[in-house]
Length: 139
Image (tube, rainbow, N blue to C red):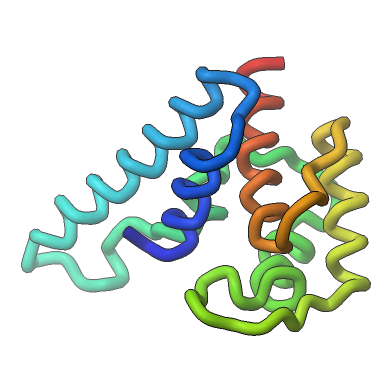
């Protein structure tokens, strides 16, 4: 399982998700994406560029809210400055606090809720995707 999807998968499995529907959507979306990737990976006629993307942003693109400068904040800064070690198993924290605060403010506004700030930056990123699914399908 791709490491970023694995972190979200484990986050959902190990945290109380307020809605069983959200829980099921997140897990099934990850499982479906990985299954599609594996099926296409087995096709020797496809190049690596033709394989489905397992980046968490791509897997959940239909669920995350639109907001001003999304491509900049979520696309460029999320895994470069906010959660730079989201894809790495062992790491130290080098989060850019300025970008983290911007991300939190934008996400709270876009989702009209406050994302969970109780845990690590990686958990905050996972909560963003969980709350995005919740906002789109439950609220």
